[in-house]
Image (cartoon, rainbow over all chains, first blue to last red):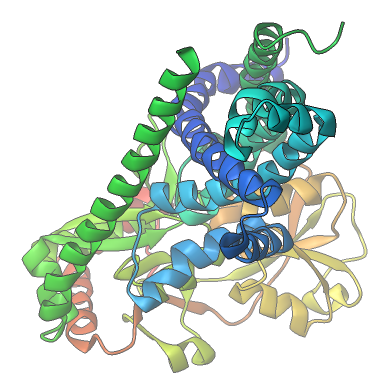
Length: 224
Length: 274
């Protein structure tokens, strides 16, 4: 083994734990918390839209329009660097959670809306015939069926959120990829450290894929 | 039953969100309110009262601001800033951000000053203040070892140069007619250069030396040096003259008593103030 290879391997071994640690301490919490709040927003927005609750429909449509139509990185900059100019100074973690939750909420609301609409209309009519109100029908009849449909696409957004969180480095939040960059700055081995960071992201996402399958089984098999 | 529990949990969580949102907002107003009062005095007094000066830096630019093997932030700029802070009688708290968020962060008062090899430039002086220079840097033109076309800055015309867009070095490349390829920092530029996706990059001679020490086998070389030297200072928002004066005094004292030379020798083996 030549010196160069030995050096690279040494760097990869030394850096594995720091990068993994940054992932577990920063990337994972940011992802989970943002996804959790994002889902609450997504459900709320989807329900407002399918039940066509007039006073709020316009507001949520506007929200989805803005969030989907502007880059996430720009949104994070506005929240973190822009808001302080009008006196709202949030720390990097909170800013990131707000940015990512709003993003998950906007995209997720469309997924959930589609899932709700995928439930045959006859189910609504049957529920109505049984004397259930619109909200009762939604809760007891429609949503349980819709969730099954929504799991694969929502797992998709969860997995892509894991990777999107690397954007938070731009607002001083030192997550997984930023730590890889810091080690690169000292060792000048960008390719190897990026591969290592990619591998750690892959580990996290693999865990999520397994969880997705479990969840699908639990909510009734979607595939067979 | 299960669903009801689920629903209840969701509601509690939502309330928690609203509540924590409120309390977080309250905390920040509480935190900013006294600061705003103090600010009517001046930033230096605020810093002294809080015992902390907040300094923006990249943390990914060796040997000026980077993380050592143990993950600790260090480097020439970091040590200079720490020394200044201790002479002001406060602690330095470093806030790490990417270069392109550096000015935005200072504007938003996320930090009080920036120590990150910022070149003192007339256009920057229109909007910001600088301390007196704490290092002079020489820009060098770096090309791939196989490249025999680029021998001087003028040869950049029509060639691709990898630079951080808002940096001073990007200006040099542009004024020589280079096509700019935006990079995140020095490391990405070198990565593009070794893989021949850009033709050249302009950077600081001291950074290049550090890189060559780490990677003696890298196929890159310095082909030209700028005649003029750039002076580099600590960057501040305008309107904080007391702070600038205090920092300048600390810098002058450091140079007078030999502390500056010690830091300079440690990182570069020479005096980098001239």
